[in-house]
Each structure stands twice: as C-alpha cells, then as structure tokens.
Image (cartoon, rainbow, N blue to C red; front, side):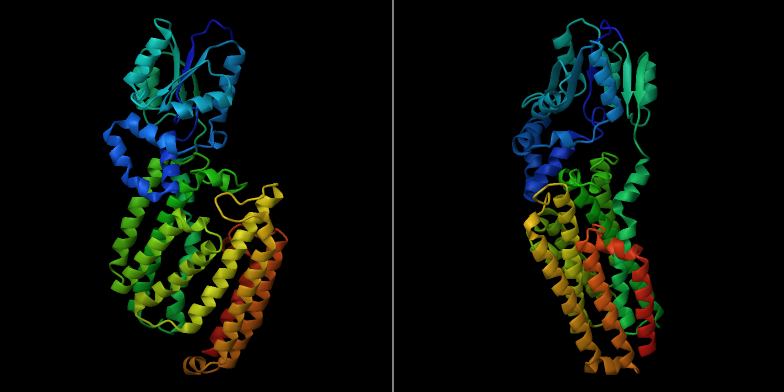
Length: 474
C-alpha cells in the first residue's frame, strides 16, 4: 500500500461500529430517567442536531465497549500504517466522535454533528468539501444515504451494507473493499426474545393442576392463551431490558454475547419488536379473562419498573423478581377463575426469592473472580457474597417449611385422598435447594438458575419423583 492513495473517509454508525450511537445514547438517557422520553420530542423541535447535543450533555458512552467491526478496524490500521490519511465523518455528536477518534488514534480529522448542524447526507458532503477542497477522497459506509457521497468519491469501501446498498455502491464506481461480519438478523431476534425462557411461564398451568381442574376443555384453551400472552409480554421485556442494559452486559463474560450488546441486532428493530410483542400479548389476553388482563398489566408495569429502576436497588430487586414469578401463578388462577391458596403463594415467594438471590450471587461471584468489586448495573459488592448465600438458603428452607405445614393442613385432606404421599416432596425440595446452593457457592451455577434447572438431569429425575408423589396422592 503506498501513501499516495486518496484519503479514506470513514462513516461511524453501522460502519466502524455495528451499533448506532444515537440509539445507544437514547437508551442510556432513558436508563438515567425514563421520563426523559417526554423531553426528546421537545428537544427534536429544535432540530435533530439540537436533540443529539442535549443527549450528549447528559449521557456518557463507554466507547471502548462498543461493538466494533473488527475486520474493518484492522484494515484501517493497515491503511494508516501505509501512510494513508483517515477521516472520521459521522452524523453522531462531536463529543462521541472525538472520543472515538482519540480511542483509536489513527484518524487525522473528525467531521461530526454539533449543536446546530446535523452532519448527515448532503451536510456531511459539504463539510468534506470544506475540509478537503478539490482533493479526491474514498468513502466507507453502509447505508442508502451514503450513496450520494459515493457518487462524489473516487472509490467505495462497503461495510455491513443494508439491503440494496452494495449494488448501489458498485453502480457509483469501483469498490475498493467489502466487509461483512453480520449474522442473520432473524436469528439474532429469536435469540433476543429468549424463547427458552418461556418455560418459566409454565407456572401458569400450576393452579389448574393443583385445583384438579384439568377436565374442562375451556380451561385448557384459556390457560394456553394465557401462556402465549405471558410469553409474548415477557419477550418484549427481555428486548427492552437488553437495550437498556447494553453497557453493563458488555462488561459481563457471557452477557456480552447478547444480540444488542454485541451489535448483532439494531436498537430500531428491538424497539419495533417491543411494541409489536406488547400489542400481541394484550390482544391475546382479551380472549382469556378480564382478571387475567389486569394481572398481565400489573406484571408488565412491575417488569418495566424493574428494568428501569428496581434492578439497581439492592434486595428490592430480588424481591421484585420473586414477585414476578408469583404473579405467573396468580395469572394462571385468574385465567380459569380458581382461587389461589395462601400456601402456594407463601411457598412460591420463599422459593423464588431463594432463586433470585442465587442469580445475584452467581453474577457477583463471576465479577469478583474477574477482580471487580461491584456488580455492573446492580447495587451489590463482592463483600455481600456471604450474606446473599445466607439469605438465599434461609429463604429456600422457609419454602420447604411452608410445604411441610401445607401437607399437614386441612386443605390437603379435602383435595387428596392419599395426602401422606405428599410427604415425599419435602425431602426432595430439601435436597434440591441444598444442592443448588452448594453448586452456586462453588461457582458452578448458571447465571440464571431457571436455565440451569431446565438443563439439569438430576433436577429432571427429582421432578419425575415429585410427579409420582403427586399422582399417588390424588
């Protein structure tokens, strides 16, 4: 490579990084305070450049954690080493653009939006002409808006092109290089909505079986619709949660591979997915029951509060998580108009609180092993590990005690003809809770205990024995 090649002008959003800094900063803004959503339209009235400036004044991005197009970055380093002039030209705010230029250290100049000018499309081209005069340049981009710049450029570098962009770039002149490291977007979307987590919503079926109301076909229709509705609603929350949690996820050894954190799925697609999934969830809920609709609405409000505020409050976050699992049981009862017992509610709160504490302990233990004192995005420190394990084990054992008291209650004798068979559930639960916490303190627990439970063969065998015990009691 010789140093006489044209300067290479490099776009940022979707090109140098697989993400978009405007949407990244909006997510950061909403995480600071969800009510900033009402200010965004007001700022936009002053122009897009004004809105970007206002956001940049309030939000700091962790530049080093952004998902870069690594193959293209390596190419730029080689070009710089060969003496080629590199210019970063972006519609993102100048604050972020300059930080990125400083981070890489190989850009000779920066063109970006300021408080008055949104450096996009024709305005970006005008700034380039102002900087370079009549000097010829080459341009690296990814979107349709870049085609007008390629028409003025000597050659094109195409990076992760959107649909039809590669052909449009080739029509403007020679293509110097093409880079594409994206995965199929539909696969990333399916991964982001976490269909494997829908198994948690199987709790909706529990009230029907405990009330022995499985003989009515209408109950099955209602419960299945309720399951679908809850699953769609939960997936919308997973999308929202992952968009708001991108900075902390990128610091985690496994969560950094989530589609939004890794830049495999655009935030625009995620936002559209949230809206569509919520609408579909409540549409299904309308055909279940009015009580179920109310419970689903409460679930959604609580999950929104958890995603934006409560997850950063120590202990309140795990209590909220336990409550969300218990709400699934309440939803199952509301779907078929059966009354939940105090015993089931108490048992579920204690057991799910234990699992929520287990989740936090596992996450904190991973961070501590990496030499980090705090859990990113959460209000826990490494010194909290002993207390979390004590609280978690105690909560699990309280759940077993509630189960034991239930087995000896009058409610059992009214529902079961052979209630003594249920006593087998107590040692099963004791062993399961104890083993789960033993594995957790050893660092062998998945960061989501529910996922571990789904995959754990020993848990499967205990579930089979528990099912036989229940069948024997009927």
